[in-house]
Image 1 (cartoon, one colour):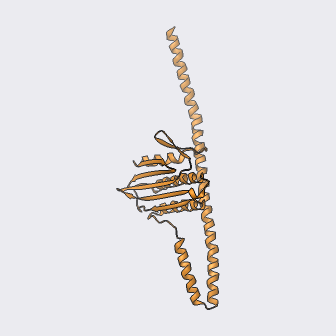
Image 2: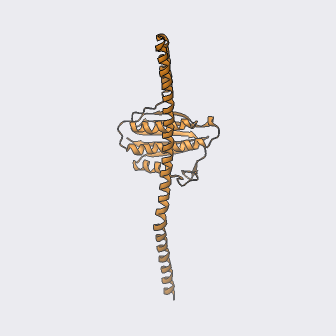
Image 3: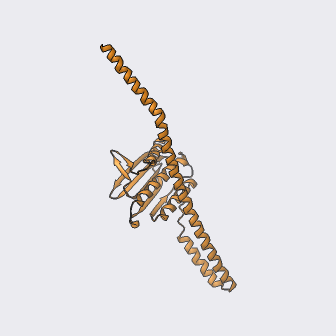
Length: 244
């Protein structure tokens, strides 16, 4: 009798395992595909925002360029060479003062940083950035850009949670430290990142919940690097160390 009972329990257990495996084979890939699709859509949306912001800047530059040309032509027609020289001098000073393009030494990092910083500034977020990156790296430039892009995206989302624009800020610092690439990105805390035990998780209510942080952690682990996150006194900071 006991033998038959054990057989029944074993059969029930095996059946339960089969059902679970079947469920995972059917449902889990769909869930992963759904999250990946949502993540890709999120990336496309952010990329479109960056492109539109750059396009608006280019239109502004084109408008200003046209006005400057007309003013200089007027000075030439009137023979006002001194006034033209003065205007060109002022224009040169103005261009120097608005030249905020960040040059790190690495073309791909320049591209991702400048597009993200430009987008942040357009959203009324104060940005302070300093970055030095070697031209040649032992890590993939794409992986590095994924890390930087995700960290700044999270920082922007946190800043936008704050109603007072004067409280929004992002600080970016990248340099070589002890033969490693040191990345530090801090921002005013908008409450989208919360501590869960020894780790931090995103509190965003979306299908891409936590995907960016996960990507950063996996890439850092891939290169045997180090990541540290801290949330103190209204400032959230992430530090990453990657071997050179």
